[in-house]
Every structure is written in structure tokens, then in C-alpha cells.
Length: 213
Ligand SMILES: [Zn+2]
Image (cartoon, rainbow, N blue to C red; front, top):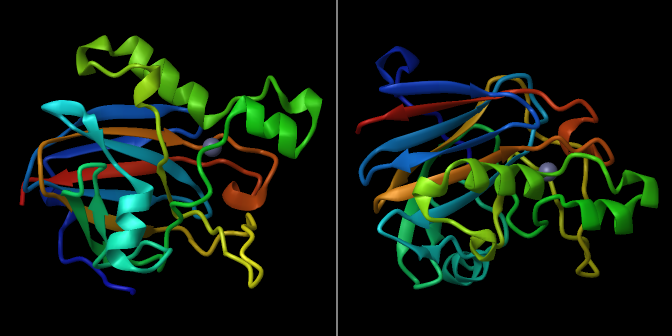
């Protein structure tokens, strides 16, 4: 469901631009609101969330989908943990829907889906691993990398139950906004994928903005 936000960028307590192929890792406190802004359009932001006090509690695609009874995420979606608690709620969305079925790109999936020579291409799982390797203070390890949300990514489910990676429905300036319901760690890879249209074959930056209420 499309819904715009009244929050003003100049009142944000934190802003940062994440280049394509780069990552962001940071804390988001309970009650804070995070906006992910698709600056140039057609970008995918592969994102994981963890309970900051206990990272073994993490975003769960299966619990989120079964709780809401639908397969896409948008305004009103409550992002659930593997302990069936609400981690965040999407409070505004000008894109319309977001994927949580397709998973993140990896060197392995690039090889299987596209070509053996794609194996060395940069992938979201590498960015996540670099993030947790460069920031051991968050206490995350490889085993904490699970299923994720692909904000702005268009992955329609076909009538026979398959997934297709389709051209994006986002555009420059579209955003999604979510309020934290617990203290969180946010781990985001701004997707470098060049083999499918999730980035329009042209990965571009996203901006993150945080408001304290
Ligand atoms: Zn990716």
C-alpha cells in the first residue's frame, strides 16, 4: 500500500549514503524510524535485522510471511523475528512492494544462475561478510547470515509458483520507512548485482535516514 511520510529529511538525526557494492552496519534504537531512499531508482537494498541485545534473534522471512498472510512487504507489514516477535513495522512506502523471497545474491548463486565466469563478481553475501568481519563489535558471525529483505526489488511470484527477477518498480526518490519495535542491528548490502534487472543493470547509491521518533 502506497503511503507517504510526513518526516522531514532536515529533521533526521542521522543520514548516510551507501554506494552500490558497499554495506552499512549500525544500531537502530526502539522507537527510531529508518528510511531507505532509492536515490536514482531501480536499486535493491539487501537487508538483515538482529536484536541488538541477542543477535541470535533475527529477521525471519517465514515468520513474517505467515504472520501477515501475504508474500510482499509494504506499509503495515510487521517484520517478525525467528522468535515470533515484531522487530519493525513498515510505516510508509512510496514504492509499493518489497521482496523477501528471492534471497541475496552470492557468488554461488551467480555461478549457478548465470555462468561459471560470474563466480568472482561482487555479491551481497560478500558485502555482509566484509561488514561483520570489519565490525566484530556487533558480535555477528557467518552463521548469523540468514534470509533477508530485498527492499525495492521486484520478484514476482508466477502463477505456477516460481520466482522471477523482474525489472524494478521503484524510481528515483522512492522510499520505504520502518519504525523499530526493539533495539536492533541493521546490516544492509547495497546490491552490486549486474546479471539480473534488479538494479536495472546499473547499481546506484541509496541513502539511509534515521529519525528519533
Ligand atoms: Zn545483491
